[in-house]
Image (cartoon, rainbow, N blue to C red):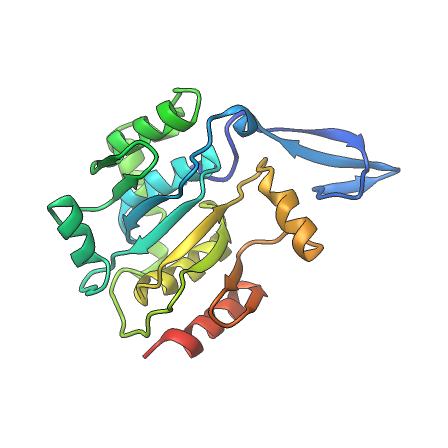
Length: 245
C-alpha cells in the first residue's frame, strides 16, 4: 500500500563485503550482504525530539515514516482518543490537542501539521529532499489511512494503565507489521517510550547486534524492571501484564 515507505533509510544500498562477523542480511563464502545508507552523513540531533501522536492517525503515520527514513530516535508520547495522560500535556504546551505535534529541544522549535513537520525534519536532519511518497497530498493521506483499515482501529482508544517511572525503550521502524501490533498496545496504554529507529540501512542495527548477538525488531527494553524482549507476542503479553490496569 505504501510501497515500502518507512522501511528503508535515505540512500539505502546493499552489497557484498568481507564478512567481519557483524550484522548482516545474509552470509556466504566469507562474504556478507551489508546494508548501508546516507544517514551517517546527515546532521544528528543531540537531544531526543518529542513526538505526540496516536496509532490510527494517518497524519501521524506520515511523520513516523519520515522518522524511519531519516533514522531519527524520538521520545514518543502516545495520545489515543480519551487519553488522559499525554493529550492534556500536548494541549498545555502547544495550545491545542492536535496531532501529530513535534517538539525539538535542539532548535527550540515545535509544530503541528504533518507536512510542516516532515519538511522540517528533512531540512534539519536530512538532505532537504522529501521522498515522493510523502508529498503526494491526498494520495499519501489515502494510502496512509487505508494501510491501517485491516486493524479495525486497534491502538486508537485509551485503556486504563499504570504509568512506568521511566520511559520504555522500543527498537522499531515504521514498515514492520510486528512493530505495529506492539505499538498499538503502547498507544492504548499511553506508555511513553524512546523509539530507537532502525529501518533497513540503519547503522543502529549493528548496535543492537553487538548488544544482543542478533538484530530483530520489535525489541523492547524496560529500565524499570530490567526485562528485555524480542518477539511481538511476548512483548505484548509483558506490556499488558505489567502496565494494564
